[in-house]
Amino acid sequence: MTDQTTILDMLESAGQARTARRRFIRLCGGAAAMAGSLSLLSACDDDNDGQPGAGPTPTPAPTPTPTAVTDVDILNFALSLEYLEGAYYNQAAFGQTVGSSLTTGVGTQGAVTGGRQVTFTDPIVADYAREIAYDEVAHIRFLRTALGSAAVAQPALNIAGDATGAFTAAARAAGVIGANETFDPYANDENFLLGAYLLTDVGVTAYRGSARLITNKTFLEASAGILATECYHDAAIRSTLWAKGLTRSAIYTNVTKISDTRDGLDGPTDTDQDIGNATTANIVPADPNGLTLGRTAPQVLNVVYQNRAAVSAGGFFPAGVNGNIRTSAANG
Image (cartoon, rainbow, N blue to C red):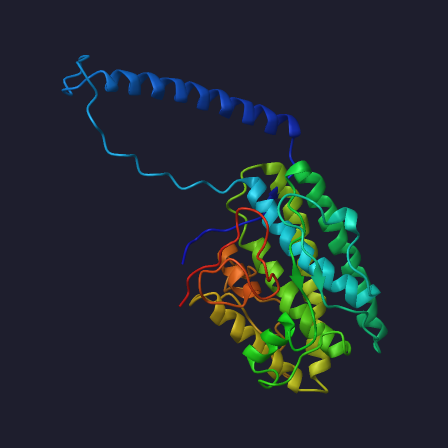
């Protein structure tokens, strides 16, 4: 698997960032000038003796160097995931989409398909939904402010709870429902929690797995703050599901099916864990060192695109995400 990770290094010193960029540009300019001079001298040496000659000696075309992932790419990938979570929680909690002023930007802006307000019967779950919705919108606003004019637009999102919905496709693939049944995450408290588990659990692994590519310490600090918030959200969802499973054991079975399916989509490594069983809770999906599990950006896209192959769209993002990080991994 490619050990490419994404998102976790945000907001240190704008002055330092500008200085570093200017230094880099100066270095690149000097290097380009030197390369140009050497290339010119080489073109005048037709016999490779180090001396100018009558004509150029053909040389093989250089092998293209892969474009490095930048901090902007990483933050825009994070923003795309926040658009998805923001859309889901805002619909579930308030029956509305994220404000249009927070969805414009670079790339093709898409519509949100599906979603409606949940008629909660458990006031605790309702309170969780509202608080998480507020936080997700705040994350969108924060990342857009950090990215400025480079922020990508909200891509097309499928959060429908009908036969054409991404939630239904995910539930069918996991065996939570039958091949001809639908899964509506807005139907009741339990379904909402399972839908939240589908998304937020993946979001945590995305932030955890994105720590090593961001270079700006400023971005790292702020992104670490978002990761911590997402972990609180996920812990609330997982612990509530676990508690409800004490009186409805099918919840444990369904969560395990979802977890196993996600783990199969993103390759052979262990990147997912269920919530436990009636005798033992597993609130934190962690490795033997107690560190929460992480996914690379392509692995995250395998899950949200609902595909083991290397593709650039599908599932919750029917037209793909905007930005330079947009292709999932080839896992079979």
